[in-house]
Image 1 (cartoon, one colour):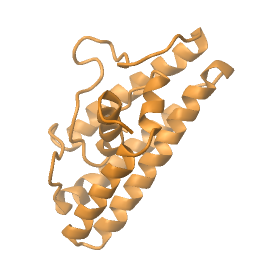
Image 2 (cartoon, rainbow, N blue to C red):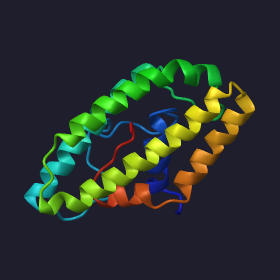
Image 3 (tube, rainbow, N blue to C red):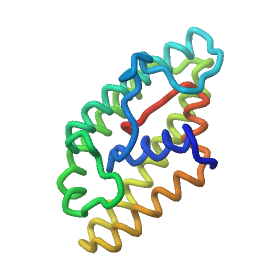
Length: 171
């Protein structure tokens, strides 16, 4: 995937749940949480995406509270990951449950599918980091952290999500 807005959104979205190392919450600059890229939508899809984006914005606020607002740009100490991860995992579980409660009409199916693909990739990334963290080896964790970044850089999952009008930097 080419770097740019979608790349930043991708890296932030997936890694925010475990690292929060970049970006700002949608809406912080007065954009009311609107994605940087959008598409014409029906009322059903607009309702779905606006509800998901509101949940994503709320999640990002809480993720920033867990990691002190600055995230972990660059080096991410394993000890900090181990302290933060249980709280972040609980936030993600709550977020996912709230998203699951949003009705998905026919016009929202593509957006919901894009979000589910993003959630699945984020979960795979977290599992990779958890496995590396369980070894207690900082070098192994650093290697997994780099692999997670590459995984998102090489995937279109984040760009697909943004194309559907969803920006989820906290997930």
